[in-house]
Image 1 (spheres, rainbow, N blue to C red):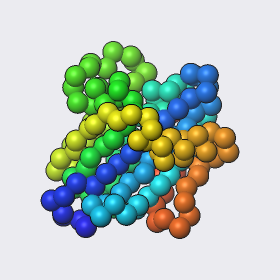
Image 2 (cartoon, helix red, strand yellow):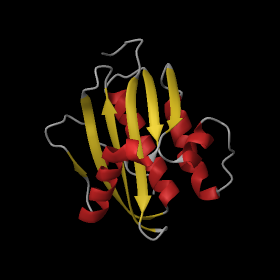
Image 3 (cartoon, one colour):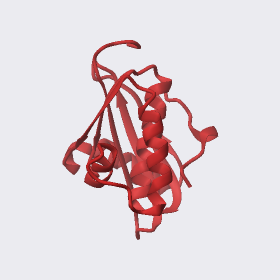
Length: 157
């Protein structure tokens, strides 16, 4: 429900085979009732794992805003990205500064965003979507779930 004081949940993931190599990102957005609003995976071409992680985060944040979310719990299995987004780590890698800036700009559009590092097994659906996108070398997702298209907004690469 737009305007709700409760938090929606966003699971994001990204991966790369070869690091850098063929990469994909995925995210799953759920409202306060736990209903899935968007489940999407994206093929990114060649990229590093961390860039793919940021791509999943940025796409998920864009989708949450498009759906009217104002408070968001972001759950990721990337400890590095979570610590960078919460200010515990500085972004030293030049290749991550731009996607980090995009993500932080999007976070400012919400009333509140909380980040949590979770074990990989608790992020299975976002991981599955990123891997399906890598395997298919194209975008994937549940066609029955309405999802804001992001093709016109481009990737981080």
